Image (cartoon, rainbow, N blue to C red; front, side, top):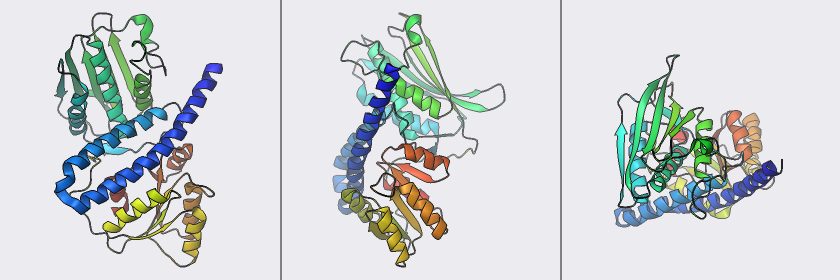
Length: 360
């Protein structure tokens, strides 16, 4: 019970830090997109460097909130071959010259509906663990194959394999425990495989581990295919062609001045008519004064009326107004998703928000 209470408190602390950090990252993400549109290709290389750093920081916030119930998942339909190729390309930068990452992507892979960032963090954790297990260097294999279950459903098996030091049978039952690590002190947090287990659980999949001391390790994530079969990839980059959203009105609600201002400017550049307010109470007052938006985009965690309560109220008085909730990690967010509200995680970029707003 004492251990469980410690984990709960650590999770609570991590979720609070993640929320605050994601607000900061939201400002950076929004301003980057604005800068990109202002200066064009001249600053593209520098912008991409900052984007990569933001993505790393976002991954860290996911780690911070790992032990809490306040993880906000942004589910998207992805083409796994394309996504894994991109992840492999990014992950290569984490490997030394003595390590080689080999990618093996099978044919006829099922589409997935997962949180792409959670998938990337999970695969990256497995690859870096494989790197650390290959003390003298060597080959790390990342593969993806379709797998047919006995009931006829198709799953995706994503495997990371190494020929490193391996894991003893007596330790394999503990490797997914938070804070448990076989690495030397200062070399590991014990949260990498815990995140892998949390991701697989959220995706309603399974994880398989085959390992023996001196004979390497093979970890396989078995992820159920997306029944809709959607075959498009939704990446986290700005759309190449800006859609014309002129005249579409948005009531933007966020109690963080910097976040609200960045989102206001960003949406305005795409032609949206934006009315930005700092609280749920102010949002309702704006509606009563006659503003009749197409959308309300609201933060969830705010002083006073929180975002879910706000959109519930708006749904009753203005049923035609569509709502999008944003969250920097909140237990309320998961309840909102179960209730049927659209929730996207901070930091979001325009490519995460536009598809939702364009579905009229």
